[in-house]
Amino acid sequence: MASVSSGLASNLSSFSNTNFLSSADLNNRQILSLFELAKQLKIGNRRIDLGNRVLGLIFKKASTRTRVSFQVAMARLGGQTVDLNPQVTQLGRGEPIKDTARVLSRYCDALAIRTFSQQEVEEYSRWSSIPVINALTDLEHPCQALADYLTIQEKFGKLKGINLSYIGDGNNVANSLMICGAILGVNVKICSPNGFEADPNIVEKAKSLSEFGSEVSICNDPSKAVKGSQVIYTDVWASMGQEEELLKRKEIFKKYKVDQGLLDLADEQVILLHCLPAHRGEEITEEALEGRNSYVFNQAENRLHIQQALLAVQLGGL
Ligand code: CP
Ligand code: NVA
Image 1 (cartoon, rainbow, N blue to C red):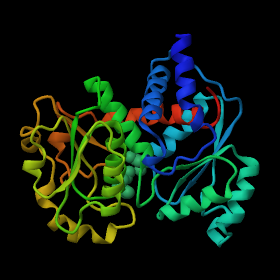
Image 2: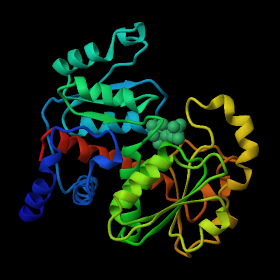
Image 3: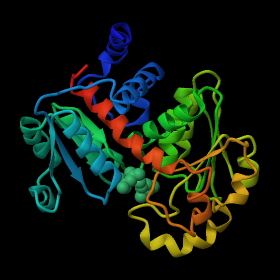
């Protein structure tokens, strides 16, 4: 146990006091070590007390899982969170990020930020002297991808060579799945309607980070995409901020609904993942979401364990 712990600590030491803005910020060894720590925390084999540390939450978009899992993770680490909702701070009245970030760095020990542009979290990180965590932007959702691959590793006992097919919008969740999957040796296919494919720059970035020969690809035909897949993943057709496009998107995406028929075309052990919240009857059917292949609530639970591990490392608790 002692040597496992010291191995983890040395693999993760370089991530102490650093930002987590993109799935590309962690390498293969660091992610696998975080998974080990998350699993130890999950089964109660390990307790980490950070001692009264404070995580500031700046959320410009709604959240259930991310917000609550960060709050509970900090409580379990002996710390707490403060809600820095832009509607009640001076941020909402136009105080610049460069001032806000420097002030908050004097009060808090880390910041988790959910907003629209990736540039905004990057700007916070430039002006903060404390770690900044991307809690979802329009470009990436890196905490989600960690929980997703932890769930897959728990189910299959491995990640290398697993085939994951994401069916739907080439959005923030798809982007982080591609990058994190490539680093972990997972073959990731993103299957979207024409015009809604994943950002080509992110596809190239993911390919450039590929380990163990993992493949990242883009396609348009869901029934072909899922052949041989051990994981089928979907997300909403209109992300937060795109609500007014939903009606138009419902028509364009209707062949991209994940139902039991699609799951039956995949590997016989296939699991179904969805970051949630789910829109039943749109990207996913009730039957699929509640069916035997669904791992979505294990996946949601893992948000807590992996974020607890991440915070423990970033705040120097190992
Ligand atoms: N999956 C996810 O990030 O959920 P929330 O929007 O509820 O945080
Ligand atoms: N793509 C979704 C994910 C929500 C967790 C959104 O950005 O709204």
